[in-house]
Length: 455
Ligand SMILES: NC(=O)C1=CN([C@@H]2O[C@H](COP(=O)(O)OP(=O)(O)OC[C@H]3O[C@@H](n4cnc5c(N)ncnc54)[C@H](OP(=O)(O)O)[C@@H]3O)[C@@H](O)[C@H]2O)[C@@H](O)CC1
Ligand SMILES: Nc1ncnc2c1ncn2[C@@H]1O[C@H](COP(=O)(O)OP(=O)(O)O)[C@@H](O)[C@H]1O
Ligand SMILES: [K+]
Image 1: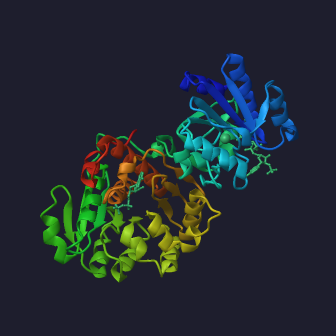
Image 2 (image 1 turned 180 degrees about the horizontal axis):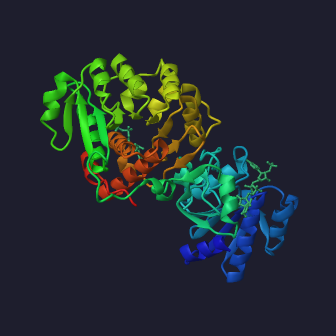
Image 3 (image 1 turned 30 degrees about the vertical axis):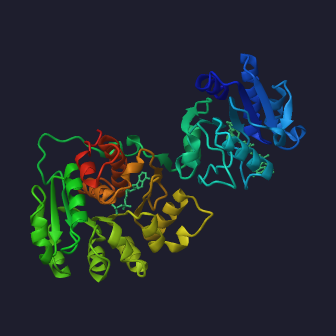
C-alpha cells in the first residue's frame, strides 16, 4: 500500500505503471502494490522473470491478490510515460542479477524512465551497498521498518534516490535487536555526552587541546585543525610547533596559542602538565620517525591520529596497536580510503566485507576507534559499536576538510567525551558545517561554519 501510494503521489501523470515482480517476497510486495494500483484505476502492466507458478508461501499468496495478467520480463518494451516499480529483488539478493533482469534494467535506463524501488533498488546488496552485476537507479525507494546499510553505504546510496522508511508495525525493540550495535549517526547516538555550559565554567574546564604543527613549509593543516578545535568548543588550543616553524605559525595565529616543541624530550617534559586534555597529531606533520615517537608517547592520553601519523605506521603498525592496547587511552584514527589501505591492507582488500565490517575489523585489530572517511563515513569502536554517517555534502571533498574534522574530534576529546562519541559527533557537526557553508566552501569557510554542539 505504501508503494502504490508513493507511485500515485509522486507520479500522478504516469501513463502506465509497470510493476516488475521477482521470485521472492520482494516480488510479493510488488503484486500487492499492483493490486492496489489496479484498484485505484491506474493503467498497469506486470512483468516477472521465470515461472510465476513457482512462487511459494507469502509471495504466492501475494500473487493471488493480483487478478491481472503477468508477462515475461523479456517482453517488456519500455515506453515514454512508463513509471517502473522495481519489486524484483530486495533483502534476499544472494548473487549477481540474472541476465534477463540486467537486460531489462538496461532498457529502462536507455529510456531514462523513473523507477520506484521496493525495499532496495534490485541489484543493490542490502548488507554492503555493493552492486551485484547491475542495478536500477531509483528516483524513490520505499523501504520498511528501518533503513539498511545498503541504503547508506556507497554505491548503494546513489542508486536509492529519495528514501522513504515506512512503518509496517514491527516493534522498535525487534528492529533494534536485529540492528545490533549499528546505527545511523544522529545526535541521539552521542547527545547524552554533549553537556551544556556550566555558568561557573572556565577555559581549562572546557578543555585544553594540543595540535602538533608540521615543519616550516607545511603548517597550514595543523592551523586548520587548531582553529576548528577552538570553534568546536575547546577552551584553549595550543599549537605545538617545531622551532623552525614558529615564525610562520606566529604570523597566522591569534586566539590559538603557540608553544615550541622540537624533540621528543620537549614533549615528555610538557606532558607532565595533566591539564593538556587532548592531542591531534598528523595533519601536515610529516611521515617518519618523529611522528611515530610522538604518537607512541601519547597513546595513554586522548589522541586523534590523522593523515601522516597514520601513514607513519604503515610498516610498523603492531608497535602502535600494542601500545594503544597497553596504555588504554582514548584513541581515534581517521583514515581516508588510501590511508586505510596503507594501515589495514588485508582488511581493505577483502571484497566480502562491507565498509562497516572493514571499519569494525580495523577497530578490533588496532584497539582504537576507527573513523573511516568518505561520503559514507563509518565510525567503529573495538567493542563492536558502529555508526554510518549520512549528512555530509559532497563539497566536503576539498583540501583541508579532513583537518577540520580532526580538530572537531580533538575539541570533543578535550571536553571529556569518550572516543567513539567524540568521533561520531564530530562527523555529524562536520557535515552540518558543510551544509551551512554551502557549495564551493573551502576548509577555511568550513571552520567558520561549525555550529554549537546540539544539547
Ligand atoms: N520481515 C520481512 O522479512 C519483510 C520482508 N519484506 C519484503 O521481502 C523482501 C525479502 O524477501 P525474500 O527474503 O524472499 O528475498 P527477495 O529479495 O525477494 O529475493 C529472494 C528470491 O530471489 C532469489 N534470488 C536471490 N538472488 C537471486 C539472483 N541473483 N538471481 C536470481 N534469483 C535470485 C531467491 O531464490 P534462490 O536463492 O533460492 O534461487 C529467492 O527466491 C524484502 O526485500 C521486502 O521487499 C517486506 O514485505 C517487509 C517484511
Ligand atoms: N564525496 C564526499 N561527500 C561527503 N563527504 C566527503 C566526500 N569526500 C570527502 N568527504 C569528507 O571530507 C573530508 C576529507 O578528508 P581528507 O580526505 O582527509 O582530506 P584532507 O586531507 O584534504 O583534509 C572527510 O571528512 C571526508 O569524509
Ligand atoms: K527491489
